[in-house]
Length: 256
Image 1 (cartoon, one colour):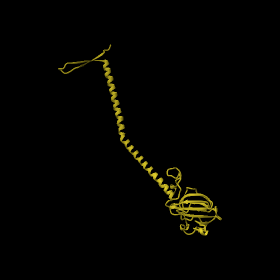
Image 2 (cartoon, rainbow, N blue to C red):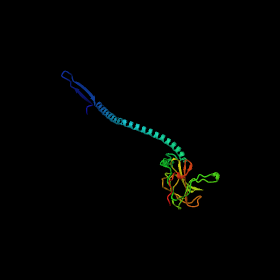
Image 3 (cartoon, helix red, strand yellow):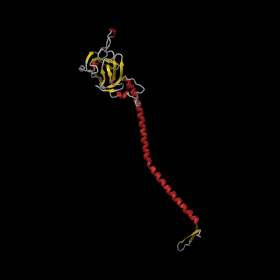
Image 4 (cartoon, rainbow, N blue to C red):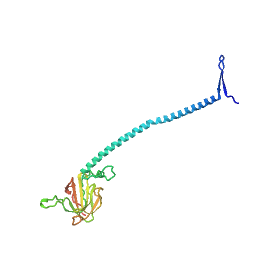
């Protein structure tokens, strides 16, 4: 049988006596197990420390990202305030330009935005291009109601049926449809409160809300409504008042 104890002898110097220790094998096993446990705990502590150190190294970067996100949120909030101000300004501008705002006429609503459509033409020149070739058959007159003279708030330009009718300036189609007097007609909203009307059209080539440019075909000459021959009835309105188109148009229309 193997011995149950282990003897340990310590030899000192010349004048020192020998020292002898006896330890059981069970105690040796316990001390070995304790050493292994301590080594495992030390390894775990070192590993945990390394992970914590790596995470701690990332903290400054995370703090910088948090600051950047907070700054971005502040910019978004500022943009929301500016958007609300722009919506309010839009409504005021639409009213000034004679466009009736609707529930869908709002920035960011996803619907048609009249202000966006008008933004390119708000500061354009007045409508000053002849809308059709032909001959003037009737001039602008304010009329005298007391004497039974009906006003004629525009020019009549006679030409061949189906001849193109052109936009007199940049703008947005505010109305297009049929009227008992004008027949098929187009109304274009221009900048600075100007509106042009094109009546007695054979057919209309544009739709409400469409942005048009000067010289673009918007309709074709006809004799719809109260008309006895093919011609264009052309009106210019400024801030709700009909004005003589000759104040804006130079010379005479080109011959058809």
